[in-house]
Image 1 (cartoon, rainbow, N blue to C red):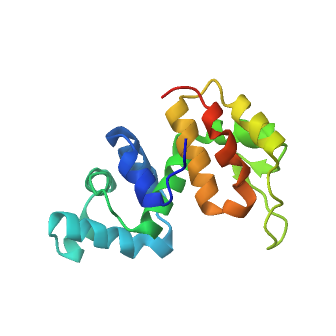
Image 2 (cartoon, one colour):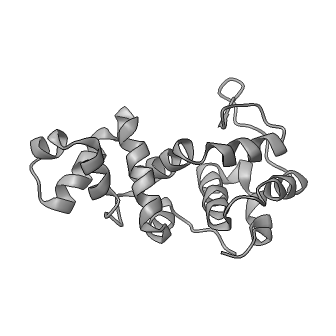
Length: 167
């Protein structure tokens, strides 16, 4: 299984319920650097004035954003992160525990500004094996999202992605 080369491509292939879960989590804790981009996507999708888009309730914003298939690469990345930090923390914890990487509730703890060392093929296999109880589509989305965030560190994931069960 080849990874999708962009966050937009992953986003487009997510089922509607996953896009809604991602958008709901995103608007629950909107990153300040993406707030304007998200409002812009709502404005464009529904031909709203920016003031009207900002006045919408978070659940209405989420429903609209979940229908946008091309929110732009930075926003798509933010939505994928929100999806995983929202409902999928058990998956993150299981994976990072299997790799023996320090984390706080599924969020990597980095030492300073230096990027982490690359994951070995053996670590990648162990991580994927630890995710056997999770839905394969969720596992593939998570692995692809990690790989997109830092291909140098997570490159070994692409080689073991075929070991994820059938969709």
